[in-house]
Length: 628
Image: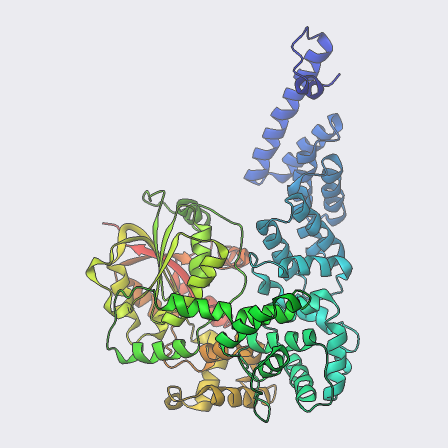
């Protein structure tokens, strides 16, 4: 009789020699497992694998031994053996999450995408499809931009799209591939044909959800929507209200970046006229709210129409209310600040949907994971965090959710942007962040000190970035750390080409209609034009995103020597770059064995010269004040 059975039943009677022997064997297995795990962590894979095999000869149903052996076999390039061991771990314990996670990632790497997504769904199901589990599923889908994922793929994408607790735009390329596989999509020509094919495609729940939730970065999809819209407005066809609502939802997500149709929108008096008007532009919030309230019963059967009205009515009205309640901590007459404020008041960026879940950690644990060989002074259990230039709040809310015990202050020039973030915080139930208007060039002395300051994507929009950086450092606690993100000159050559083409002197006078026309001009450029690469960016497909990416009123671009000079002038210690992919630092360490911490900026300048797109997502790095 097994010891687990006895323990489960609280048996405390006489224990005979058979049980004592089983206890001895169990203790020996536990000792060997600990020994093998230690060897594996030290990199002695052969010795660890040998012990795992010894253990499995004694106890075949020990899931951790199978799983750890699978990791070793994967590292050694023994793909068939690794897959067999992952599956053996699952057979031994079907609820063993590590094994399901390992199998899903392994199958994805081997481009067995259908099997991988099924394993990912099983892993998420073990956590009852909670937001962190769905975020992990979304991250898995991101690695599957090609291939037909089948029904399991549709289920996985739909589960992620149907919640605001997941950052679903991570797998946008996977979604585009799914849309392009839909019957008839690739063969559309006329407007009526486009409308018919899209109407059929919207019967697929995952495609309808994608059009309602995410900006779809595809020039072709823009052409299909424009053709379908023209067909409706010309009276050639009139599809269901739900089809019109889905077209309008996608147009609104892109902030009507497509060039507008001819004619004038109808006066909105009912749901039908509201839907037609929404093909031209946004409906007045009070009118959308009124139609929503009056049509409550009808809209129960029209979820996409209801969603469109909610976004254009109550959500917009709530942002207006919040805008008037936000405190103003500081302001200035700085000309650059004024120009930037005006831009973001007109074009808040980004109008995001979906916040990343999971990965909660303490600030000390986060720093240790990023810079394992660096010693940090003790930081408080409830750190004060400043997000400088928070925009519409996505990063601030992610930080508030990610760093446990944190109290986050999020500041920006634009009250309209701040109101968007405040509404999202309400909707997501995040209450440890406060939003306030403030100008970084004029922070008050009484502003306080923070354990973490993040200035990501803001300093390069200022007249004197280094001076603003110094101003923030005045509010960094002595033991505090700072994260900075700056544009790279090398990585933004296509953006520079656009700005050269348009002329820097025009940036402050461009209207939204000008930007719509310029988008069309850029799309018409030949593929070998240096500016054409910008059409591959998600931001190109929304009006505020395109403006922020290409036509910002004030932009400076940095290089690593300038960052190095600023670090030295400001009396800072460079802690290292942060990358989303661990392989970047791994490759750096293999090349620069004398700098395992990756702190030599001259080395990084040489790396960037060889790989100009390395910092496309900005130079993202951490620093702190030099210690005495």
